[in-house]
Length: 210
Ligand code: 5GP
Image: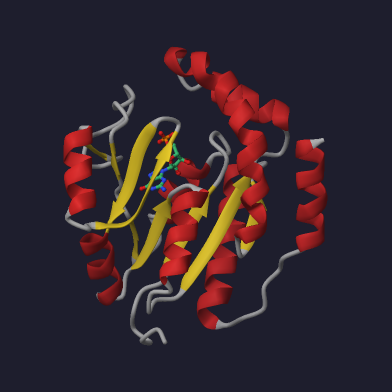
């Protein structure tokens, strides 16, 4: 059972390019919310700041963290390793901070299966259409253009994991998507009523994959 004053774990996952990172950035500005900073073996993008966006490490260091059992979860995504270390997250939660995780479905599954003594709310973010997703992936930067098509292919597989999340939210507009997630988190924490239509989401996924 979660202790009343403990923070809540909030996972946001999505196929690449659905806008989840911007949503996490907005949510992190809320009072008492912190972001879990992941370790990765991926190289930094030009707009990324080390130790703020990620802890960028080499494979040797990543493997050392695995061996020392420092990860709450880790996974290989697009040929790079990504992982969440335990200590920082647990400290935040024990101090009553809500922790936001920008991680993929493999990490979300691992954290779910750990059945930790903290409340967990999971969100899966979807793009409004495949066309918009491709635009978003292509416009990131020149280097990413080369891999946009690969990530589109990956999309078809990743989207199928929507079913394992508590809520699926469509990111057609950053601000309204943010407000929807914020409301759902508040409703979950206060045990209030949740405005959520799972059948609508099921139809949207069918459209995205048809
Ligand atoms: P990107 O390289 O675009 O920043 O992230 C690629 C994918 O890896 C995204 O879906 C992101 O959510 C996921 N990711 C980032 N950090 C972690 C992590 O610590 N663990 C897991 N499992 N996935 C992560």
